[in-house]
Length: 502
Image (cartoon, rainbow, N blue to C red; front, side, top):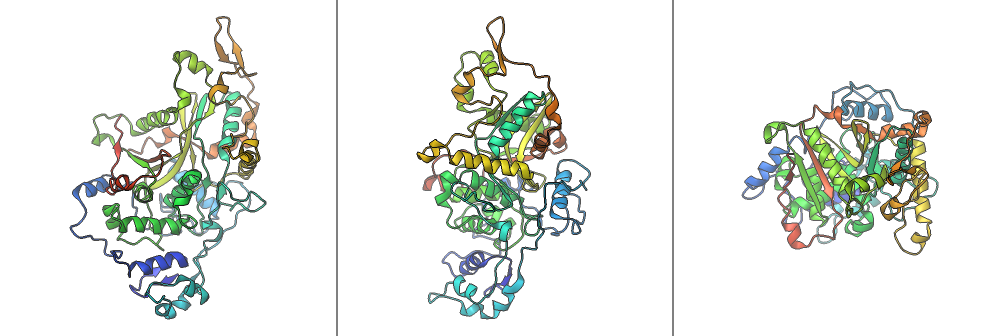
């Protein structure tokens, strides 16, 4: 960590982020560290943030304490701490046993050796007075050693060789989940499921951001998911500190005045929590089209229906509303022809509630239950599932379509998982009734219930009924449209949202 030579604030950041903070003091429109702006924030902005304060900016908490129940987790391994927090968030009593996902390293990712270079700070400037991060680094000042905890990996062209994918990245999981869900359907457990078209799980690192980084990690998942479309927008490698820099840049451009005020105008190098509103401002300032959806508590809307039921209905509509769901003249026939498990065309969305956020990549119906399928940055993907995901991505890249420059199709997993027009073809699991209708054959074999790989689905499943005690949610969704023009960006400077009441 380093102390800013201008304002004497301690900055927990790498050289680039530290330089960004110092340079802000010398810019024409300097970063207002007091958090106030001329004229103050607009009334509309303050109302929007006051309504969503429970979703956005949580106070800083002890790095070794569970932010749900307050239990001291300093004596636990990263996996055990993640399991405890996840259990608390899912309605459990906490203290879940450590999952056997393979050995993980616990590492303190901070390095305080920058302190030795602070005495030279005022000399490390260019001729025009700007901060020279290269000169600072040349003095051997060290870095914010995020290492594997904050290392970026290119999800489109990054190497898939042994050890090339950082341990907290799990790409290529959608085809694997598709296959596992199909096997679950064949076992009679899954009635139907729909998955997003893409998604990369990125876990937080307990030694670096394990107690405060969920918002950043979900932001990174959104970046990774849309990297093929928006990659050139991000200058430099995305990471926790990079997101802090981009949010501060958005503030300085006039985005989210209320958010800037709540976070005191300073984010780079801190361990402050961020929410979906902060990510909305960042993505909007970068020109990436996204929408905030608010699910208010019953007292703030016209109906007293449980909020989680409204979220369930909205989620089903979101993932079902794509081209492969429309165009049928006979809804009953279309329903019968539809495969039990399919990959749709929608992008994952970020769901936030009670101070924690996760990335939703689909939903599953099992009997009477509704499960969200999520990538939780507080959870580790099982080793076998992660390896299968990397293998599926390798297969997709090696396909003829990929070598010809076209977008490769997802590798066809086990079972009769089909998409688009292929869904109209009969498979071994379909049968034609005496009346000429096509239906899925009854499955009586329950053997897969004991399949270790299939049981890994529980890492991604969240029964929404367990969240019935939560009364408010917020969603940040992406539509994959072309970059916003200047007018589109200006229109989003004041954070606004779509209220979902029914």
